[in-house]
Length: 166
Image 1 (tube, rainbow, N blue to C red):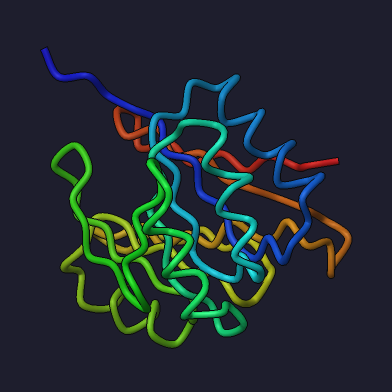
Image 2: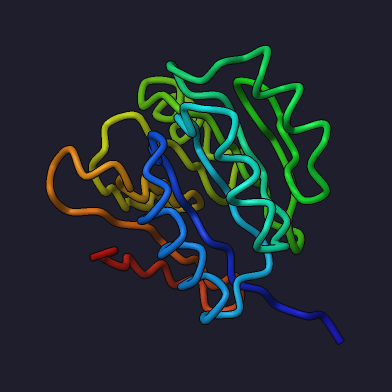
């Protein structure tokens, strides 16, 4: 029997510890088994915050992440997998492309090679689907545009839900 899972999608946390913890608590409550963070953790100490929740987390660099210290910190983590600028991974047989920037995400989306394309940077939610590929930007935790959001993808139902973090 294949175990289907929920994937938590988060981006642009920008050192917002309080609301990142709220997002992680929601992921725990919703039984999320994997997190995808599409960049801009900002400070490497955010890895410690995420790591405490014991959820496997795939992370890519954003434009303001400290590459050296984030890499060093991720190597000390038991749950964080840092992929660099771009990740191509498979989860439950589904092909994911993850990066921070919308232009790169659009190129991956147009190839129709992936089941899901995840990105961040704009701080705004995005959910679109072509014949094969779903593109998702979960929004932001920072609060730059007042609405702090994350997304949860249910692999079994293919449903994506956005959640506000208050």
